[in-house]
Length: 378
Image 1: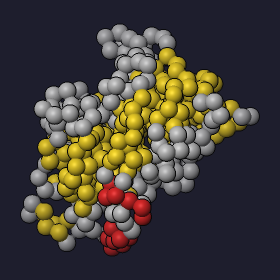
Image 2: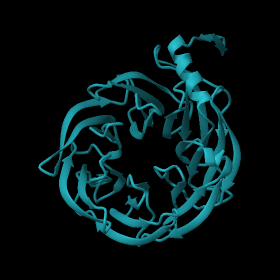
Image 3: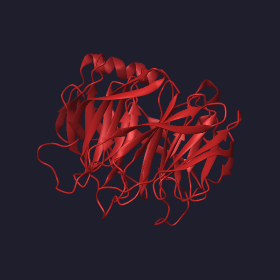
Image 4: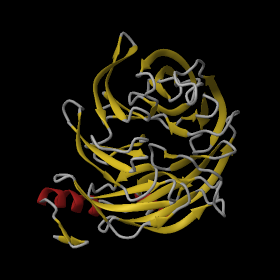
Protein backbone atom coordinates (compact mmCIF):
# COMPACT_ATOMS: atom_id res chain seq x y z
CA UNK A 1 0.00 0.00 0.00
CA UNK A 2 1.09 3.58 -0.69
CA UNK A 3 -0.14 6.41 1.51
CA UNK A 4 -1.03 9.52 -0.46
CA UNK A 5 -2.66 12.53 1.22
CA UNK A 6 -3.85 10.34 4.13
CA UNK A 7 -5.53 7.91 1.73
CA UNK A 8 -4.49 4.34 1.03
CA UNK A 9 -3.78 3.55 -2.61
CA UNK A 10 -3.77 -0.19 -3.32
CA UNK A 11 -2.48 -1.85 -6.47
CA UNK A 12 -3.84 -5.19 -7.58
CA UNK A 13 -1.14 -7.89 -7.86
CA UNK A 14 -1.49 -8.22 -11.63
CA UNK A 15 -1.18 -4.44 -12.01
CA UNK A 16 2.04 -4.58 -9.98
CA UNK A 17 3.34 -7.36 -12.23
CA UNK A 18 2.64 -5.25 -15.32
CA UNK A 19 4.38 -2.31 -13.68
CA UNK A 20 7.45 -4.39 -12.84
CA UNK A 21 7.61 -5.67 -16.41
CA UNK A 22 7.29 -2.13 -17.78
CA UNK A 23 9.96 -0.65 -15.53
CA UNK A 24 12.41 -3.50 -16.14
CA UNK A 25 12.11 -3.41 -19.90
CA UNK A 26 14.00 -0.18 -20.52
CA UNK A 27 14.53 3.51 -19.92
CA UNK A 28 12.06 6.16 -21.05
CA UNK A 29 12.22 9.86 -21.78
CA UNK A 30 9.31 12.20 -22.43
CA UNK A 31 9.16 14.99 -24.99
CA UNK A 32 6.83 17.91 -24.21
CA UNK A 33 6.04 20.48 -26.90
CA UNK A 34 4.76 23.95 -26.08
CA UNK A 35 3.88 27.31 -27.54
CA UNK A 36 6.51 29.98 -27.01
CA UNK A 37 4.49 33.10 -27.88
CA UNK A 38 3.88 34.08 -24.26
CA UNK A 39 7.13 32.72 -22.79
CA UNK A 40 10.41 34.54 -22.20
CA UNK A 41 12.45 32.06 -24.28
CA UNK A 42 11.98 30.06 -27.45
CA UNK A 43 12.40 26.63 -25.89
CA UNK A 44 9.41 24.91 -27.48
CA UNK A 45 10.51 21.34 -26.71
CA UNK A 46 11.54 20.03 -23.29
CA UNK A 47 13.12 16.64 -22.68
CA UNK A 48 12.48 14.80 -19.41
CA UNK A 49 13.86 11.65 -17.83
CA UNK A 50 10.91 9.50 -16.79
CA UNK A 51 10.87 8.01 -13.30
CA UNK A 52 8.52 5.11 -13.99
CA UNK A 53 8.45 3.79 -10.44
CA UNK A 54 7.43 7.12 -8.91
CA UNK A 55 5.50 8.53 -11.88
CA UNK A 56 7.47 11.76 -12.23
CA UNK A 57 9.48 13.76 -14.79
CA UNK A 58 12.93 15.31 -14.31
CA UNK A 59 13.90 17.92 -16.89
CA UNK A 60 17.20 17.18 -18.64
CA UNK A 61 17.27 19.55 -21.62
CA UNK A 62 15.42 22.21 -23.60
CA UNK A 63 15.37 22.64 -27.37
CA UNK A 64 15.13 26.08 -28.94
CA UNK A 65 12.22 26.02 -31.39
CA UNK A 66 9.32 28.46 -31.76
CA UNK A 67 5.73 27.35 -31.12
CA UNK A 68 6.22 23.59 -31.24
CA UNK A 69 2.51 22.88 -31.27
CA UNK A 70 2.92 19.15 -31.95
CA UNK A 71 5.68 16.53 -32.19
CA UNK A 72 5.78 12.98 -33.50
CA UNK A 73 8.36 10.17 -33.49
CA UNK A 74 9.14 8.03 -36.54
CA UNK A 75 8.05 4.40 -36.38
CA UNK A 76 11.68 3.26 -36.43
CA UNK A 77 12.18 5.29 -33.21
CA UNK A 78 15.17 7.17 -34.64
CA UNK A 79 13.78 10.63 -35.41
CA UNK A 80 11.49 13.29 -33.96
CA UNK A 81 9.57 15.78 -36.10
CA UNK A 82 8.01 19.00 -34.89
CA UNK A 83 5.73 21.77 -36.04
CA UNK A 84 7.30 25.23 -35.89
CA UNK A 85 6.43 28.70 -37.15
CA UNK A 86 8.68 28.18 -40.17
CA UNK A 87 7.14 24.84 -41.13
CA UNK A 88 8.57 21.57 -39.79
CA UNK A 89 11.86 20.53 -38.20
CA UNK A 90 13.63 17.14 -37.99
CA UNK A 91 15.79 15.85 -35.12
CA UNK A 92 17.79 12.70 -34.55
CA UNK A 93 17.18 11.03 -31.17
CA UNK A 94 20.67 10.49 -29.74
CA UNK A 95 22.18 9.11 -26.52
CA UNK A 96 19.94 9.48 -23.52
CA UNK A 97 17.08 10.75 -25.66
CA UNK A 98 18.75 14.05 -26.51
CA UNK A 99 17.84 15.68 -29.82
CA UNK A 100 20.26 16.64 -32.59
CA UNK A 101 18.89 19.09 -35.14
CA UNK A 102 18.90 17.71 -38.71
CA UNK A 103 17.08 20.22 -40.90
CA UNK A 104 13.91 22.20 -41.44
CA UNK A 105 11.50 22.61 -44.32
CA UNK A 106 8.71 24.99 -45.27
CA UNK A 107 5.15 23.79 -45.89
CA UNK A 108 4.09 26.57 -48.26
CA UNK A 109 1.28 27.72 -46.00
CA UNK A 110 0.34 28.84 -42.51
CA UNK A 111 1.74 27.16 -39.40
CA UNK A 112 0.66 23.54 -39.03
CA UNK A 113 -1.20 21.99 -36.10
CA UNK A 114 -0.32 18.27 -36.32
CA UNK A 115 2.08 15.98 -38.13
CA UNK A 116 2.66 12.24 -38.58
CA UNK A 117 4.67 9.85 -40.74
CA UNK A 118 3.57 6.90 -42.82
CA UNK A 119 4.49 3.42 -41.56
CA UNK A 120 7.62 3.19 -43.71
CA UNK A 121 8.92 6.56 -42.42
CA UNK A 122 9.27 7.71 -46.03
CA UNK A 123 6.67 10.49 -45.93
CA UNK A 124 5.61 13.25 -43.55
CA UNK A 125 2.03 14.57 -43.41
CA UNK A 126 1.19 17.97 -41.94
CA UNK A 127 -2.28 19.22 -40.98
CA UNK A 128 -3.06 22.92 -41.33
CA UNK A 129 -5.71 24.17 -38.92
CA UNK A 130 -5.41 27.81 -39.95
CA UNK A 131 -5.52 27.38 -43.73
CA UNK A 132 -7.34 24.03 -44.06
CA UNK A 133 -4.40 22.43 -45.86
CA UNK A 134 -2.73 19.01 -46.00
CA UNK A 135 0.95 18.96 -46.95
CA UNK A 136 2.92 15.84 -47.91
CA UNK A 137 6.73 15.92 -47.72
CA UNK A 138 9.37 13.35 -48.66
CA UNK A 139 11.61 11.93 -45.90
CA UNK A 140 15.15 10.71 -46.58
CA UNK A 141 16.67 7.59 -45.04
CA UNK A 142 18.75 9.77 -42.72
CA UNK A 143 15.57 11.34 -41.31
CA UNK A 144 15.90 14.70 -43.02
CA UNK A 145 12.86 16.38 -44.55
CA UNK A 146 12.81 16.82 -48.32
CA UNK A 147 10.58 18.43 -50.86
CA UNK A 148 6.81 18.86 -50.87
CA UNK A 149 5.21 16.17 -53.04
CA UNK A 150 1.55 17.13 -52.64
CA UNK A 151 -0.63 19.78 -51.03
CA UNK A 152 -4.42 19.86 -50.87
CA UNK A 153 -6.76 22.49 -49.46
CA UNK A 154 -10.07 21.43 -47.96
CA UNK A 155 -13.00 23.45 -49.23
CA UNK A 156 -16.52 24.06 -47.98
CA UNK A 157 -18.55 25.73 -45.25
CA UNK A 158 -19.03 24.57 -41.69
CA UNK A 159 -22.28 24.54 -39.77
CA UNK A 160 -21.40 27.07 -37.06
CA UNK A 161 -20.65 30.44 -38.61
CA UNK A 162 -19.10 31.99 -35.52
CA UNK A 163 -16.48 29.24 -35.28
CA UNK A 164 -16.52 26.55 -37.96
CA UNK A 165 -17.10 28.80 -40.92
CA UNK A 166 -14.25 27.30 -42.93
CA UNK A 167 -12.00 24.23 -43.10
CA UNK A 168 -9.70 23.48 -40.17
CA UNK A 169 -7.60 20.36 -40.73
CA UNK A 170 -6.74 19.34 -37.17
CA UNK A 171 -5.19 15.88 -37.58
CA UNK A 172 -3.74 13.60 -40.29
CA UNK A 173 -3.20 9.89 -39.71
CA UNK A 174 -2.47 6.90 -41.94
CA UNK A 175 -4.42 3.67 -41.66
CA UNK A 176 -2.13 0.97 -40.24
CA UNK A 177 -2.06 -0.88 -43.55
CA UNK A 178 -0.42 2.29 -44.95
CA UNK A 179 -3.02 2.62 -47.70
CA UNK A 180 -5.20 5.59 -46.77
CA UNK A 181 -4.63 8.97 -45.12
CA UNK A 182 -7.41 10.17 -42.82
CA UNK A 183 -7.70 13.93 -42.25
CA UNK A 184 -9.97 15.21 -39.46
CA UNK A 185 -11.54 18.55 -40.37
CA UNK A 186 -12.80 20.27 -37.23
CA UNK A 187 -14.44 23.04 -39.25
CA UNK A 188 -16.38 20.91 -41.74
CA UNK A 189 -17.43 18.15 -39.30
CA UNK A 190 -16.03 15.28 -41.31
CA UNK A 191 -12.93 13.18 -41.93
CA UNK A 192 -11.62 13.12 -45.49
CA UNK A 193 -10.09 9.81 -46.59
CA UNK A 194 -7.34 9.87 -49.22
CA UNK A 195 -5.77 7.01 -51.14
CA UNK A 196 -2.01 7.29 -50.77
CA UNK A 197 0.49 6.73 -53.55
CA UNK A 198 3.67 5.54 -51.73
CA UNK A 199 5.80 5.91 -54.88
CA UNK A 200 5.11 9.54 -55.73
CA UNK A 201 3.81 10.85 -52.40
CA UNK A 202 0.43 11.86 -53.82
CA UNK A 203 -3.00 11.67 -52.18
CA UNK A 204 -6.41 11.38 -53.85
CA UNK A 205 -9.71 11.68 -52.00
CA UNK A 206 -11.77 8.48 -52.13
CA UNK A 207 -14.17 8.75 -49.18
CA UNK A 208 -15.64 11.00 -46.47
CA UNK A 209 -16.50 9.95 -42.93
CA UNK A 210 -19.42 12.19 -42.02
CA UNK A 211 -19.53 13.22 -38.37
CA UNK A 212 -22.46 14.88 -36.64
CA UNK A 213 -23.09 18.56 -37.35
CA UNK A 214 -21.28 20.76 -34.83
CA UNK A 215 -19.31 17.77 -33.53
CA UNK A 216 -15.84 19.10 -34.56
CA UNK A 217 -13.71 15.95 -35.06
CA UNK A 218 -10.31 16.74 -33.56
CA UNK A 219 -7.89 13.81 -33.28
CA UNK A 220 -7.69 10.25 -34.65
CA UNK A 221 -6.20 6.99 -33.38
CA UNK A 222 -6.21 3.46 -34.79
CA UNK A 223 -6.31 0.27 -32.73
CA UNK A 224 -3.21 -1.93 -32.60
CA UNK A 225 -4.51 -4.25 -35.36
CA UNK A 226 -5.75 -1.27 -37.38
CA UNK A 227 -9.36 -2.47 -37.58
CA UNK A 228 -10.84 0.29 -35.37
CA UNK A 229 -10.70 4.05 -35.80
CA UNK A 230 -11.28 6.30 -32.77
CA UNK A 231 -12.31 9.92 -33.38
CA UNK A 232 -12.60 12.43 -30.54
CA UNK A 233 -15.16 15.18 -31.24
CA UNK A 234 -14.28 18.47 -29.56
CA UNK A 235 -17.67 20.18 -29.44
CA UNK A 236 -19.83 17.10 -28.78
CA UNK A 237 -17.43 15.83 -26.12
CA UNK A 238 -17.57 12.25 -27.30
CA UNK A 239 -15.62 9.57 -29.12
CA UNK A 240 -16.87 7.79 -32.23
CA UNK A 241 -15.63 4.27 -32.88
CA UNK A 242 -15.52 3.01 -36.47
CA UNK A 243 -14.88 -0.43 -37.90
CA UNK A 244 -12.35 -0.14 -40.75
CA UNK A 245 -11.85 -2.60 -43.59
CA UNK A 246 -11.05 -2.57 -47.29
CA UNK A 247 -13.73 -3.74 -49.73
CA UNK A 248 -12.90 -4.00 -53.44
CA UNK A 249 -9.77 -1.93 -52.88
CA UNK A 250 -11.80 0.90 -51.31
CA UNK A 251 -11.89 1.97 -47.63
CA UNK A 252 -15.03 1.21 -45.63
CA UNK A 253 -15.78 2.83 -42.26
CA UNK A 254 -18.81 1.77 -40.21
CA UNK A 255 -19.68 3.50 -36.94
CA UNK A 256 -20.13 0.99 -34.13
CA UNK A 257 -20.15 3.18 -31.01
CA UNK A 258 -20.40 6.72 -29.65
CA UNK A 259 -19.43 7.34 -26.02
CA UNK A 260 -19.25 10.58 -24.00
CA UNK A 261 -15.97 11.92 -22.62
CA UNK A 262 -17.84 13.58 -19.72
CA UNK A 263 -19.68 12.61 -16.57
CA UNK A 264 -23.41 13.36 -16.31
CA UNK A 265 -22.40 16.37 -14.19
CA UNK A 266 -19.87 18.61 -15.92
CA UNK A 267 -18.97 22.19 -16.81
CA UNK A 268 -21.17 23.83 -19.43
CA UNK A 269 -18.29 25.02 -21.60
CA UNK A 270 -16.45 21.70 -21.91
CA UNK A 271 -14.48 20.85 -25.06
CA UNK A 272 -12.80 17.49 -25.69
CA UNK A 273 -9.11 17.71 -26.55
CA UNK A 274 -6.58 14.90 -26.20
CA UNK A 275 -6.66 11.37 -27.59
CA UNK A 276 -3.94 8.88 -26.64
CA UNK A 277 -3.62 5.11 -26.54
CA UNK A 278 -1.85 3.40 -23.67
CA UNK A 279 1.45 1.71 -24.42
CA UNK A 280 -0.24 -1.73 -24.42
CA UNK A 281 -3.22 -0.50 -26.52
CA UNK A 282 -5.67 -1.56 -23.79
CA UNK A 283 -6.77 1.94 -22.76
CA UNK A 284 -7.75 5.16 -24.51
CA UNK A 285 -7.23 8.53 -22.81
CA UNK A 286 -8.93 11.82 -23.57
CA UNK A 287 -9.39 15.15 -21.77
CA UNK A 288 -12.00 17.86 -21.43
CA UNK A 289 -11.08 21.54 -21.41
CA UNK A 290 -13.48 23.74 -19.48
CA UNK A 291 -14.51 20.76 -17.40
CA UNK A 292 -10.77 20.32 -16.74
CA UNK A 293 -10.99 16.55 -16.49
CA UNK A 294 -9.32 13.45 -17.88
CA UNK A 295 -11.25 10.41 -19.03
CA UNK A 296 -9.88 6.88 -19.42
CA UNK A 297 -11.63 4.13 -21.38
CA UNK A 298 -10.95 0.40 -21.36
CA UNK A 299 -10.77 -1.10 -24.87
CA UNK A 300 -12.43 -4.48 -25.35
CA UNK A 301 -9.70 -6.51 -27.00
CA UNK A 302 -12.14 -8.47 -29.17
CA UNK A 303 -14.68 -5.84 -30.22
CA UNK A 304 -12.66 -2.62 -29.89
CA UNK A 305 -15.58 -1.03 -28.00
CA UNK A 306 -14.95 1.42 -25.17
CA UNK A 307 -16.11 1.34 -21.56
CA UNK A 308 -15.46 4.25 -19.21
CA UNK A 309 -13.07 3.59 -16.33
CA UNK A 310 -12.98 7.08 -14.82
CA UNK A 311 -13.52 10.78 -15.51
CA UNK A 312 -11.88 12.97 -12.86
CA UNK A 313 -10.35 16.48 -12.41
CA UNK A 314 -6.73 17.17 -13.45
CA UNK A 315 -6.02 20.08 -11.05
CA UNK A 316 -5.22 22.45 -13.92
CA UNK A 317 -6.87 24.60 -16.58
CA UNK A 318 -7.42 23.42 -20.17
CA UNK A 319 -5.81 19.96 -20.28
CA UNK A 320 -4.54 20.07 -23.86
CA UNK A 321 -3.02 16.59 -23.62
CA UNK A 322 -3.16 13.72 -21.13
CA UNK A 323 -1.33 10.41 -21.26
CA UNK A 324 -0.83 7.28 -19.21
CA UNK A 325 2.75 6.38 -18.35
CA UNK A 326 3.83 3.14 -20.08
CA UNK A 327 3.27 1.25 -16.80
CA UNK A 328 -0.45 2.22 -16.70
CA UNK A 329 0.01 3.19 -13.01
CA UNK A 330 0.57 6.91 -13.52
CA UNK A 331 -0.79 9.77 -15.64
CA UNK A 332 0.39 13.22 -16.68
CA UNK A 333 -1.84 16.12 -17.71
CA UNK A 334 -0.60 19.11 -19.76
CA UNK A 335 -2.64 22.09 -18.62
CA UNK A 336 -2.32 24.73 -21.31
CA UNK A 337 -3.97 27.71 -19.61
CA UNK A 338 -2.51 27.22 -16.11
CA UNK A 339 0.96 26.56 -17.58
CA UNK A 340 1.48 23.35 -15.61
CA UNK A 341 1.93 19.62 -15.83
CA UNK A 342 0.13 17.68 -13.08
CA UNK A 343 0.86 14.07 -12.12
CA UNK A 344 -1.35 11.32 -10.74
CA UNK A 345 -1.28 7.76 -9.48
CA UNK A 346 -3.84 5.61 -11.28
CA UNK A 347 -5.68 2.45 -10.28
CA UNK A 348 -7.52 1.30 -13.40
CA UNK A 349 -9.32 -1.51 -11.59
CA UNK A 350 -10.86 0.77 -8.98
CA UNK A 351 -11.19 3.86 -11.19
CA UNK A 352 -9.01 5.99 -8.91
CA UNK A 353 -6.90 9.02 -9.75
CA UNK A 354 -4.84 10.54 -6.93
CA UNK A 355 -2.51 13.57 -7.10
CA UNK A 356 1.14 12.54 -7.21
CA UNK A 357 3.49 15.27 -6.05
CA UNK A 358 3.80 18.89 -7.07
CA UNK A 359 2.95 20.34 -10.45
CA UNK A 360 5.74 21.24 -12.89
CA UNK A 361 5.70 24.66 -14.54
CA UNK A 362 5.67 24.70 -18.37
CA UNK A 363 4.44 27.66 -20.41
CA UNK A 364 1.49 26.64 -22.64
CA UNK A 365 2.23 22.90 -22.92
CA UNK A 366 0.53 21.22 -25.86
CA UNK A 367 1.70 17.64 -26.47
CA UNK A 368 3.55 14.85 -24.61
CA UNK A 369 5.16 11.72 -26.07
CA UNK A 370 6.84 8.92 -24.12
CA UNK A 371 9.81 7.34 -25.87
CA UNK A 372 11.54 4.10 -24.91
CA UNK A 373 15.24 4.44 -25.64
CA UNK A 374 16.60 1.92 -28.14
CA UNK A 375 19.87 0.07 -27.36
CA UNK A 376 21.71 2.55 -29.57
CA UNK A 377 20.25 5.47 -27.61
CA UNK A 378 21.07 4.18 -24.12
